[in-house]
Length: 271
Ligand code: GLN
Image 1 (tube, rainbow, N blue to C red):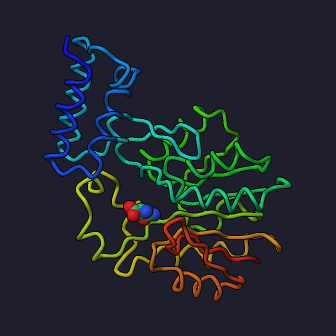
Image 2: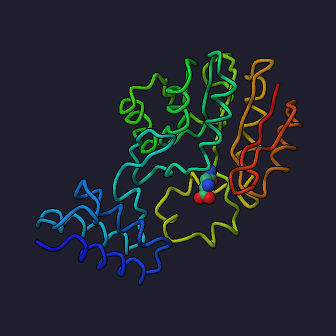
């Protein structure tokens, strides 16, 4: 047995010494994850809890993201399994869901490309009555997509395929196409934090200028958006103008939506 407050202080210090961005938050989350309580309300940790906490802290000190250590993370208020081979859901991506949900207030049909964990299409399916599809190419990520659909009892059809293949699902058309493609540039990839090296490069790296995926998927899916429908793509904070140009060239009227930090985050093209 060890006192909860003592253990909390010990791991907060270890995380802070290792340069964690918010050691207090991480220390509390780790204690909560493995005890079901918080350091303030808990007296002691038993042997099993200590082992679990210590193991998590060791992995965290090795740079592994907290989300992979817990194996689960929340997005849009829903739980998602995450781990090696799948991008961790980011809070700023919730904006993409907000945009899709607004457009689908009367239902309709939606497809999400580069789905990864499925956080976007699952959230859309749970918030609307739209018929939802999700496209993911890679085996590991596809496994998470399927498990997250089941975990949330969401009605989403998972399609294992390449988002650059514009002939997926025949000539079906959509009210909304969402995408959070890989968009980091070569220079951003060289500077990434240790945590990001645990995530799949295929979900992060978008070529020299970060725009390769947009150049490929936007033209091939443009005709699959119904008149009055939208395509909405998450972008990096400096990519709003460049992605807007690609979408306009594909026949959309375009607007750029900023995230809560005031950065370009989603380019929306209306058909
Ligand atoms: N937003 C992610 C990051 O900065 C990148 C995700 C992506 O490339 N789609 O880590």
